Image 1 (cartoon, rainbow, N blue to C red):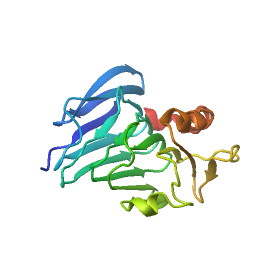
Image 2: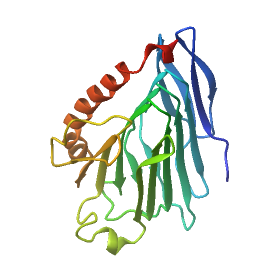
Image 3: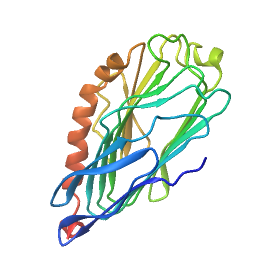
Length: 253
């Protein structure tokens, strides 16, 4: 069934963040953790067993000019056996001029029998930045395979594409082919948009054609893939913060 999205909308009023639109969905409850001037931290707390056949979990994020939003996930997401059905997960983030988004999501597990479509869209205005991390886990530790997964990412700045990716893992034999996942069951990614590191410093990192970079690691275990990108996350968070520091102060007033 189609459900209303969980919504997060934040704006800057007289130099301080105002929570303009915070709304829960059937699946998620956004909970403010604290406001400090132009910065705000908000947790996405699960409130329903996720995800079952027919579920359509949507997240809608709007970051106003000059606002620095960090999203925290206390727990991961699990797509369960759909018993012949399917489920959807989607997140849309719009970041206005001079704003920033940091979102290090918890692992997303696709179990055996699940059938999931996952989509993330990030739209940045001029001077906006985003730093995201995600970990896709195909099957629980005692499962030999995961159900079909199609994961899409589209990130743009001022209407120009930074990263457009369609990861189609619906075929088991193709998924395990060399050059795709091979024997790995975990795919971890760190994505920086709107800012650009000086260089790719590890074998996992790739500079994008536009203002951005992508780091990716494959492993059999989630902690191994995330550990491989821990240094990248820390370093790119510094790059992200430096880019925000260069934004003219008038965008925060």
